[in-house]
Image (cartoon, rainbow, N blue to C red; front, side, top):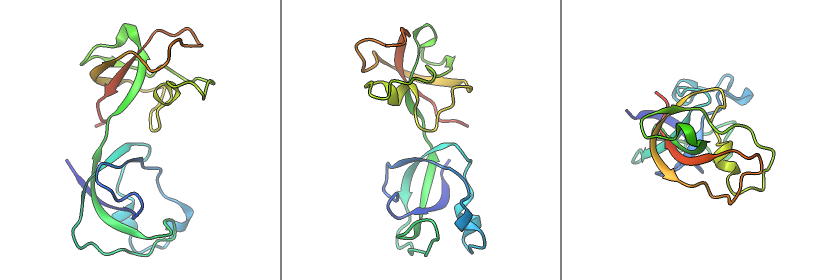
Length: 148
């Protein structure tokens, strides 16, 4: 189900994904707080609709202001241990990795993901983008369902 919220105009593009980080110090005293701070902190969202004729409102956080959009929780692509990589099953992420130059790093440590949580696998995408895991992990690239 979509949620109406205000986000920075630079993010206000259909299909754009972001992780909601919560209240900033500049939000204190803002008259739009209730419309902006209505998402779950740490959750990943996708913009699904831009409100037609929505005004751009001044914002102490976003330099170009905020505008009204509809968002829904978004899933994410991630590497998980191959032993748990089945559509419909639950798995934790592959875990922290110091090899930031690896083509799989963004999937082993996805933005908005937590290594302590279990996620339901929506689909199995296949082999991860790396040729060999430097941590000798056997990983599979999957699409995780959005958090509820």
